[in-house]
Length: 360
Image (cartoon, rainbow, N blue to C red; front, side):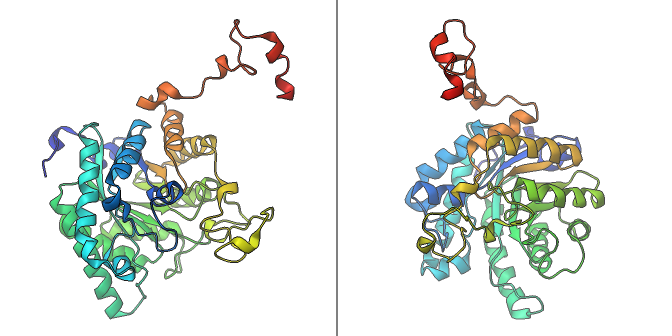
């Protein structure tokens, strides 16, 4: 695959080390499920092969809204997941097609970065040598295809074990590709196999050779910010990542994996009894303003790799970009209430309607 003028683009680490924010759009999995192209439960991204035009369009939408990184949609597109659905034969075509789509969109946006994507395998067990060997093989397989496609970086997502994160880091280092490592803390305090704090875990991974490390998924903007603040007290060089889910988590419900909607009309319909995760989270959806607030606060505390995860959508990305002082292609359509029939202030609007606004 062609380099797409790679030598003329600023790389990931060059951008971060110069103090720039790098914006990343994830959340493809949940968005594709909402649109009816992906099955909740297994969450395997077969849409890449079945409807590549849909993946291409979502990637383009994120790019128009300010994403600097175009992510190849291979989250949960690894051998273990494909084995679960009996379609291991589609593994290589799926990965190669996803990378092709990301590069195709980048042809329209030459300054963007293309990222390969790997994630947790769900088979890692601390101290189990057979498990570690199998996990390494999964990463080596995907990273091999990623390296062949000439990407700018790899994003590793939702690692709740530092042991698995280190395997991913080692494989990416051997491939010579910059790595952004997203960690998952289900309680906002710890990893599953690490007794120290999240900040210490992040620093340990940086010392291990990971390029950028931080938090992604599970925590919404409100509950991720305090964790990132602790990380930035330890990691002070800006190589910190934060891309939260698009759901309004709270100290009482810090992780979207355990959210419960007490106002739900019909709890008996939930696929996981008593739990809104993963397909009844609508009432917890964040507004664009919460993501704008997150971007400003996270950047101010030293986070330089920012974005969205599950539940995030293009309008969230645009709000983040604009909060950081950018004008995106999609900013042409950013809200402007001046022409609104009831709330606007344009002199041509009818006073009859504007006076009724408080009752509208």
